[in-house]
Length: 170
Image (cartoon, rainbow, N blue to C red):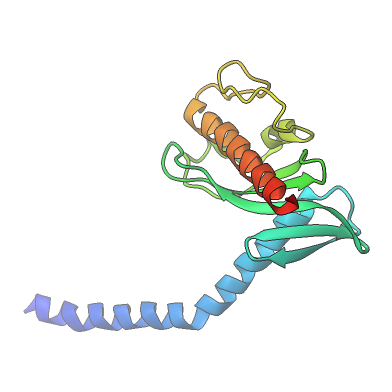
């Protein structure tokens, strides 16, 4: 008999959850888009620069002069899942900034990928040594998989962006 009482309660709760999702999904999407735009702006050294979207590639400008590119990239794997991030480069294909969009790495251990650890990549290019064990970039003890994944992911995105730019120039 108690089970029969729980069924309508469960149905009412399910309908409420679905209804809440329907009411809030547009606002959540808009907030996510605004947050991602703020992340891109934060990577640019000059607050007077603007961003123009071209499919998955964003071009940055100061006035009408192009200053660089921003691309969204995703690693192949992390410790728990893929890691999505923004990569901003200047016209010489040197990194201007990296900003993590989302990840599912271990909280408290992998928090470094959202902070100052990413600053070490500023000014880096495909000419750097991207070897994850002996290269130009520091790994984090206790979070080696996450740091190696980010180093490899940034290098891959940088290489693909450079190859794409070279193809476009031809």
